[in-house]
Image 1 (cartoon, rainbow, N blue to C red):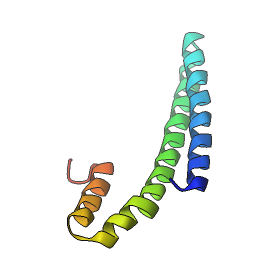
Image 2 (spheres, rainbow, N blue to C red; image 1 turned 135 degrees about the vertical axis):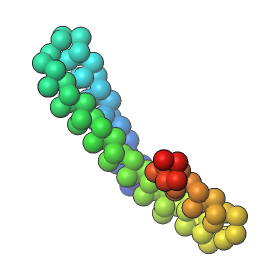
Image 3 (tube, rainbow, N blue to C red; image 1 turned 45 degrees about the vertical axis):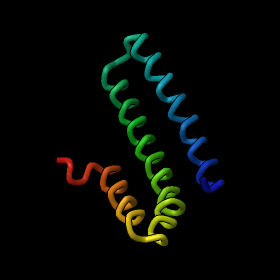
Length: 90
């Protein structure tokens, strides 16, 4: 894993962990529903941001390597990317 991306991804997961704990506390305290929904949406956006970092790492490392080798590895890389976004499975 690329060191800078790893550092940012770990930071993002720590933030998400805190957000999820906060949401659980809100649910336990029976906070206002719209506030809980807002927190849930923030978590979803943070997860999307994490996905982008992980995808960037995959593209810069594994996919690059797989395309350089061509053939079956290249086809596998394409299939993995399509699967990551459920393309063709709808």
